[in-house]
Image 1 (cartoon, rainbow, N blue to C red):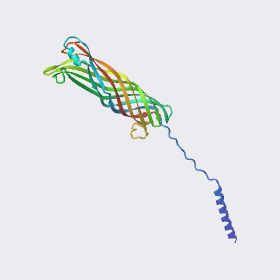
Image 2: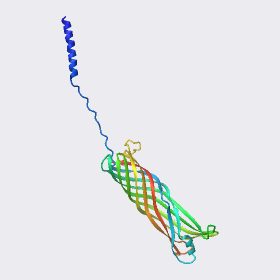
Image 3: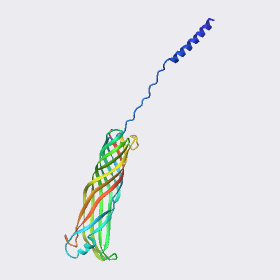
Image 4: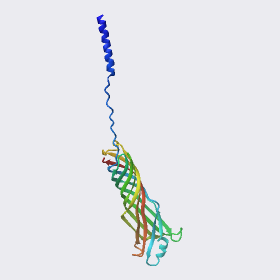
Length: 286
């Protein structure tokens, strides 16, 4: 009987301890730790490459005689001295750029920057027009030939944009420069007679002007396979740029066969066009 009483007492004690333990407060699990992802910033230096397509509006190259000394040449000048040729250049453009951006507030906010770039341009066109002295069926003609090319194009520009985290929309404008080549010549052709050069000339020089445009740029994740230089970011951009290197009057003088200073003329050229390009930048900084 005593054993039964002891057994029942042990069971009651065990049950009471279990209930009491259930009423004790449990040790709470540590709260999860949230590590905030740092906001992307466009601040920093960058450098990269770009390539695209360049083209000019259809322009008119005008050639006009400024002086004539001696009779006999007036007739040729009347037929060719005031000439106009339509010219339009287009071709491949490729080069590199470097610059610096400063973002006022990380994440979303204004971005100020400066950029310089230099690109080879395949913009070269030669135009030729022949006008018969005595109508379209004449075997004699005055031929005007012009050539216009842009060897390279460079700019130094400011940039102002707004960042939406990893997307940057911007406008840009500043100085433009490039090496231009202008050539113009007018000659007289008659069947069975050697060509007689009336006047010609050209220039090959560095011209300056201005450029403006805009674009959109996107920053890839740092772990992108394109990040071969382990930079803080790799960015891709699409950009439009309009350049204007101004007008230039090219003096033309008579060639051998008419004598020195017998005929003087000028050809009026203009170097203005647009560039559409894509670029790849490596950003180094915050």
